[in-house]
Each structure stands twice: as C-alpha cells, then as structure tokens.
Image (cartoon, rainbow over all chains, first blue to last red; front, side, top):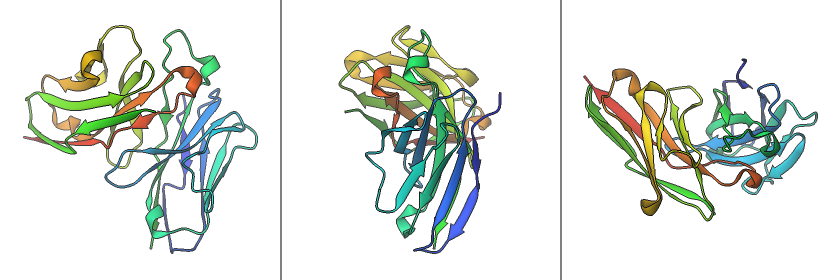
Length: 120
Length: 115
C-alpha cells in the first residue's frame, strides 16, 4: 500500500515570500490532516478535512495560511506571507472517516514524511 | 478538551536497559491513546494504540504500554533497549470517533541509546 506522499521535502524561503505544500493521502482515506511541528515540540493540528469539507481549522492562522482539498483527494497548504516563526515541518496525515472506522473504534492516522520549511 | 503531558524531553538509556517513557493525559471523554515514533527526517510511525480493550497494549519493535485510568497514564516501556530505538517518541490522545479523530500530541521524548 502506498503511503502518504508529500512534496517538497525541503523548502527555504525568505520572510514575506509565499510557499505551498502538496499532499496525496492514502487511497480511500476520506479524512486528511495538516499538522505543524516546530523543532522540539509535538505536532499541532492546523486543519482537518473530511472529503473536501473542513472539519476543524480552529488553529489555522487564517491571515496567512490557507488550505484546500478541492476534489476530496489531494490537498495543498499555502503560507503567504511567511514569517520566521513559520519555520517548521509540515506533516500531512490521512485516515478513514469516523463513519468508516471498523469495530476497533480508534481511527489510526498515517503520516507522510513531512515538508521542512526554513524561513530566513 | 484533551491534553497530553510527556515527562522528560530527553531520556538516555544504555543498550540492553529498560526504556520507560512517561505519558499522562487529560480527556473529558473516554480516550483513545497512541504512541508514535519519529526517526530523523521521517514522519510519525504508529507504535501502538489503546482503544478500551485490554489495558496492556503490545506494539511493534517490542514496545508495550499500560493504560491506567486511575492515574490517567499511558507509559511506554521496552524491556531491553536497542541502538535502533534511538528516536523521538510522541504520546497522543483522541476522543470519540464522532469528534473527528484528531490527535492531540505531547511534546515528545527524545531517546538516546548508549552502547
């Protein structure tokens, strides 16, 4: 089974520039998540999609971050303009939707390798 | 609201020694609990999960964790550390599946294994 694909793996930009990250989830996974992992910290959820609809974007800095999942498969996370504090690894994850979860109950997230952003 | 606290941001163990990583959680609903491992420059890989079945959960690579409701803990252990266990470990909690299954992570514990 192919995993969660992310690109680019590494990106270096200057502050006030823009950047976009792409994620292709596991086939059949209706739920897609973007997490931000700052060095030395645990991942923090930025946004969660169910198919092409947003379930939770309460921690997304909407003045500079945007994300879309237009066809309910691939997703793009954009930052414009970038700030120094946006330097982090951006992790994409996918899972079955709550309605697809099997009898085991807990839904397991599968993560991509991440996109490391450095803002200078 | 859910939260996770991992005690100790760094742990150093000798090869062959016990590995013990501590995790305490806070959840307003019966939790699902997870341990993930992250190797350098890689994404997170699931080690094990607790889903209200057995309180002692066995995972991959010889790791196991015990859910203790009275202590709100889910500590991760491995009887004998191997050099390949050097990585960062994250404890995470999620609520009922109807709540969307999002994971809330602790701050992570980096494990160093000494030969």
